[in-house]
Length: 208
Image (cartoon, rainbow, N blue to C red):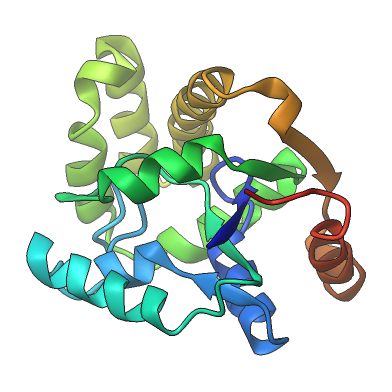
């Protein structure tokens, strides 16, 4: 199986792009869909219950069985854990060694996408999930984030949350071989051309 990773900071829209790529005939595996989790402290919101680990691995195995192993398969840049589930070691190790097409999406576009996706949920639910990362946010940031939620200042709340996730993502990427990461500018205002560029990038980057 030849793997390419679709990377990008939180809110870049990687999952949506994988679905679009699949509709164009690209081989993709949507690990977040299989895991019923969007891959963050807020990942359970709006999702069905997660499967058991064994069921997740069976679903993943069935997806992989359908692949043409001579063609590239795209996966999203994920942490080892997706909610309570763990990506099998063999696959995760290959994902970490694979080349990454790293999407560069503007901060404003990422903010807008996240606000649209998550601000449909009650602020009580957002507060509950925000508290789950209190240790990592720190007390002052947590207090400020919850106050912004209470005041319906959603952008200010999100700036705090996104700052944490951007740092976490950057730290994870620093552990990769930097020569394997290839940046690609993408804007949701030009989806078709951007999607074409992503798909065509597989001809430039040799997958492993």
